[in-house]
Length: 185
Ligand code: 5GP
Image (spheres, helix red, strand yellow):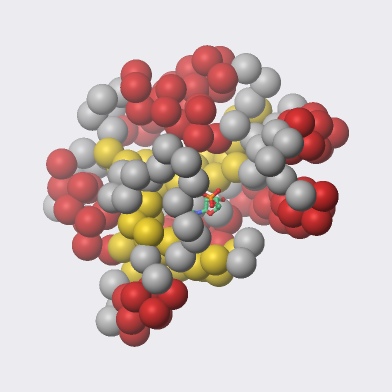
């Protein structure tokens, strides 16, 4: 019997999901974070085993072969997957947050029908585009790719249990914490 619930969080690139997520996790120390495996290289500040397990494509393919993933998906030129074992172990000790995109979210819901799916949306697509362009570290081609992906993700948000708008980080985190308290406590 697992002690906690699964909370699946998705949100398009540029929506500020990581900031909201750290705010949520800081305010609820009992929540565990499901660490995904990915073939994308680490960004500055990311630690192996904390942000992600950074693995080679061959290792990722081997993990698929061995059935180690609860779900996995290829998007934005890389593979991402949720290792089943660490997730189940974390669930034994409390509720777990997964930061995964919609295909993964729906696969988790199939496996765990009680999972709570929360989508973080931008105030508008115009605002998302403005945020993506103001980052300055992304090529025009990458921005177009992310916008196209974001549009698709926004369409998927209709199938989530909750859609929370990130107008302001603290308020968005408040709303998410309220949902978690309702479902997990
Ligand atoms: P990033 O490369 O910016 O960290 O993440 C890109 C996208 O991959 C985000 O939408 C994130 O939620 C998603 N993602 C991260 N880990 C997983 C995973 O294990 N499975 C799936 N399906 N998506 C993931």
